[in-house]
Image (cartoon, rainbow, N blue to C red; front, side, top):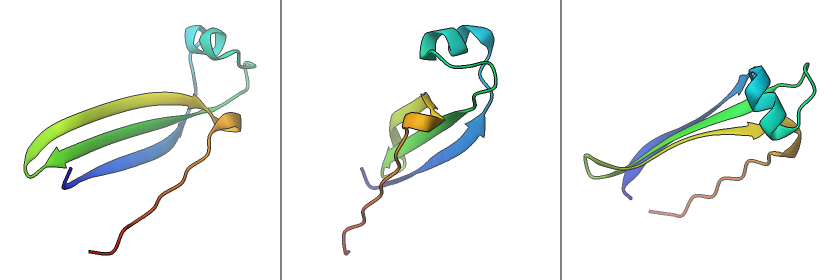
Length: 64
């Protein structure tokens, strides 16, 4: 992969997603979207919905 982006934003789950994730009605989630590129070619697309109380974000960058 040579580039791309990842976005994390808050969201409100519908009833089906709350049941699936075992969430209380007032709980929020985090929506993670990612696009990875090899040059100009998309090689990965990810759309994830995760519990906000069990999510940890970590990023590392290597020197170029």
